[in-house]
Length: 126
Ligand code: THU
Image 1 (cartoon, rainbow, N blue to C red):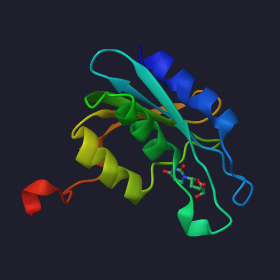
Image 2: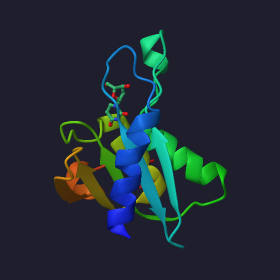
Image 3: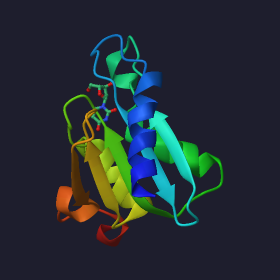
Image 4: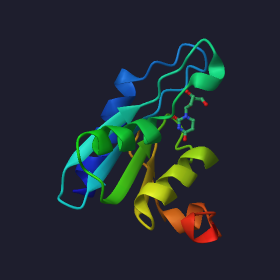
C-alpha cells in the first residue's frame, strides 16, 4: 500500500502546473479505508496564489468525502521536504501520520507529522 501511495505521488508530478518555479511536486494521501487520492502543485502568475501538492491531495480527498488519513507521500526531483504551511494543514487534518518523502528515483525518507512539525500549534492551543 505504501509503495502504491509513493508511486501515485511520483506519477502526480506529471500533472503539476509549475511554469514559474519549474519545481514539480506530486502528492498522495491514504485514507483509513485504503483509498488513495492525489494532487500536484498548481502555480499562479500571482505567485502567492500557488497551492502546494500536499494540500491539493488532501483537499481532493476531503472534497470526495474522505476525512481520515493514515499516510501521505510527496515526490519531488530531489526529495524535498513538505513546506511549513503544508505541515500545519497536515497536522490539523491528519494528526500523527506517516509521511513518505520521495525523489523521482524512489529514494524514500520515512517520517511522521510530529517529527517534521514538533510542538505544533493546533486547536488544543486555542
Ligand atoms: N511546493 C509544493 O507543492 N509542496 C511543498 O511542500 C513545497 C513547495 C511547490 C509550491 C511551488 O509551486 C513550488 O513547489 C516551488 O516552491
